[in-house]
Length: 351
Figure 1: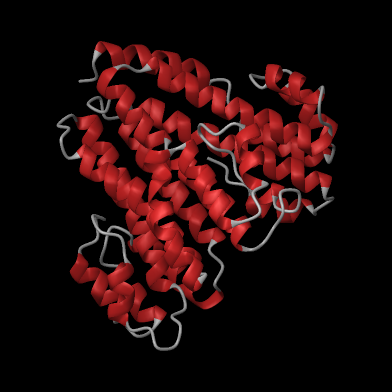
Figure 2: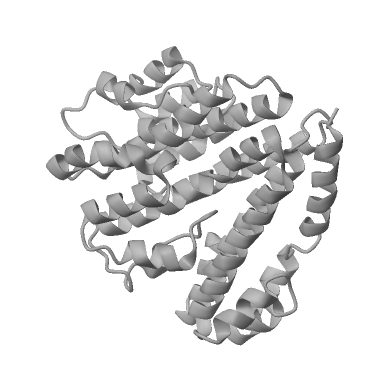
């Protein structure tokens, strides 16, 4: 059963969850076609303080971006402050996944030579990186300067980047840096969680293993460059996922996306097999990524119903909150760019 501390946290989280925008709210913002309508809506929501401050310095989509990003950092800070002892450590680990995503976006922009202004819309909110720090890091004009800045900001997550930097500079292969990050976050945290015995810790281990599976499956279904063997691909995969090494090797050696999908169909990711095969043929990962997100959110929903997972409500709320902020950013930037409603709807994730 969940502890009294978890019961207190979950009661607080239920109140916060009631303030999330629903699908009807987001669709109304889309239908309005007006940026000022987003502002009017957010000024009557938990984003009110951050948006009022943002409007004193920015306007339009930039004000929305600043407000929702700062609100996310503040919200995640409140979630972590609610927890104590083991719960605090577990919440920190889980919420850190969004710092990982934000760092990858910064690295990707620098790799492609985008300056701070050009690459601003492709950056994503971080769980604990303020907008000011993100802008400062985005303005670094070399990968070395960016890596040093990231390591100074969060050494636990980013110290592996410093070690991987020489290999990146030699090959210009961005995956070298991304792999270092993934190992610092997923693999290191799984090792750390091995000393915990609670049901909460075991559940977070399950989530991290599933995320490793997501990364490994994407790599296995990506088009393989000439001269790269199945064994070469397997060697680069992350360890400690839920899919066994034997099955990973079988997928890698399948020969065609269709045959590889047949192997995946025999795993807990059977419902993703068709989407993975489609990704292999089109190279477009966005729809597959959304399906993985929905799969993780559904896993969290089921965990909330299991009384022995005390942190489940907090973890699910954190994911829903991040998704809400992502949707608001997509709508704001899309309306500012006068993109068609149908295109924006394809990018939104309703949960």
